[in-house]
Length: 283
Image 1 (cartoon, one colour):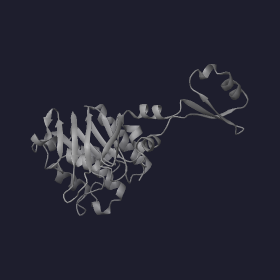
Image 2 (image 1 turned 90 degrees about the horizontal axis):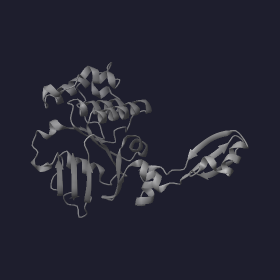
Image 3 (image 1 turned 180 degrees about the horizontal axis):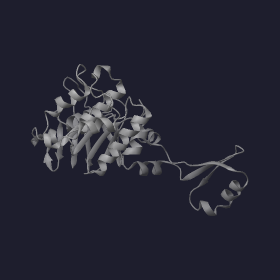
Image 4 (image 1 turned 60 degrees about the vertical axis):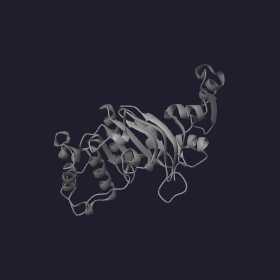
């Protein structure tokens, strides 16, 4: 669906490249994540892919067609959820959607009332956006990205500014979009969002991709193949996962007192990111 080869980009008047020979592919129906701190090149990559930035070097193809050969029909095919809300504040939420809907083919538009209800804005659809909280603006942002039923979606920090309940709603809907065959490119520095959503992730640092893999494989590769057991009396011990059920030391330990919890010791994505790149993820 999306293929990027040797992508490099330098902003005008800058001496240093922001992106340095990026190579990655995103398959149809895949949720693909770019993980990295602010300034790593995540948003710049997306801006190139949705044709806000040009003058890049390298090759990009969408559905086996060079990105530079796509015309205005490309914008029917993609939806963009920006990191920061950017609405017309004096218009109501519904008026904002109606305005942007005029740019798209009417046959592809989803039902606005259903979208407002799905994301908890049904009682505020006719309210001016200037009266919205940041979280409400972010939900409206998300609706605007998906309202024309695009095949490809770009989300930049999709859960930023949302409370846990609404963040979970957004993540659940992104997963739903995947089941509909949508191709989804998420950029974030939120390791939990990436771990929960993404089929594969790329770690990007200083404009370079350091590794691309499934989150589960990354965590397993860079973590301990062991479990940590904590008993009610406060005692803790670690045991290798291999042959755990027949390990006499493990069996003796759990028989000595009631078990409080057992946790695997796989690495978190943030721990893996720091290990692979030497940079901090949460910035």
